[in-house]
Image (cartoon, rainbow, N blue to C red; front, top):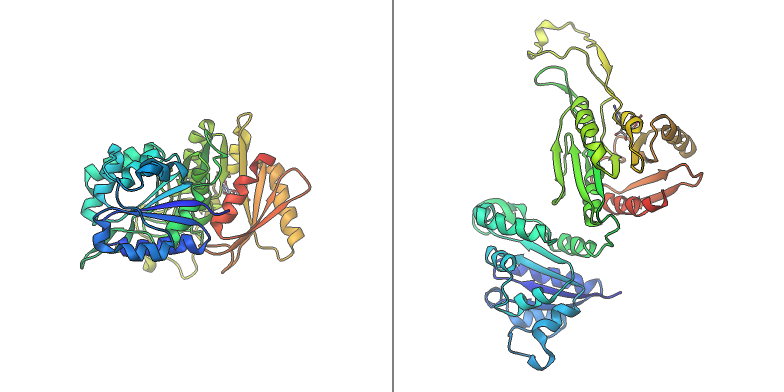
Length: 395
Ligand code: C5P
């Protein structure tokens, strides 16, 4: 269904990239009204916005007074995106200024508000700017970016506006039903690292992408999310509480401590099953070790099994099973066993290998519950994560 989207544009050089944001919304069939500020129009002119949005572009608070346009646009909008959001615009939105058409439109709208900040690193990190971001976040405003990369001058750092397609994807996902509103969700992600000595460790190929996607999708569905993460190769989503750990032992302690305060617990981390029994406190020198060296390993705690034992009534606990058997029915049978042995309410089965299942790739997972029927989802990790969360009421 076409949505009524307002794209507010404030006066930063990234306004030229906002043209592609508008174009992408239009390409996906939505009805876009662009509201540029006076300074935005110094970067990109009115004809460009009108041609790309295929709609007339209101700029003046005192135009269209008969249709009460200063509030009508906001009242009718399904989604409001401001890209780029400058430091000045953040201050104005955080204070609720209604000095121009974009200000009145934002105040009159109850639709999700998505901001894509763009500014120099020093400005983004300034305490006043961060206080405005925090204040807007607390009121439910969604932020996408800024990202790290080349800035307008010769410098680079955090402050670059996210790519247009990323902004559009994110903004549309903010319209997701708030099915986890009021729920507290605890998710583990990433690969643990078990030290052999101060510089070497036993690790695994996990990038943490699935746990991070689940955290982001749970947040978008209104949950209050805590992400306990070991080593990640992807950025954690904004708006979730982060607890950083390194080893299985540390993750075990964090998860057990946090478990009672959460309604849903998902163990998506790739936890090492073994660790060195006696890690060296000094770097092991090659010259001192024999040609064939077998460090003594011991089992790490099985975190999800322990959480299963301690599970409070009403809590939903989900484990993952990364299986490598070629035959689907054998993979499913192995995963189904974990429902009982680990006392989980569901197991998410995925196939992993050298190039399958790890990282920001397309994935396929099967959700296994006590029901003999299982559900399989395929797609990007974000879409699979979203569909897994949407299937939870069936538990
Ligand atoms: O038995 P297996 O390691 O395949 O089970 C995978 C599930 O168990 C995942 O949810 C993983 O996060 C969890 N796990 C754990 N503690 C371990 C090893 C795995 O919680 N020591």
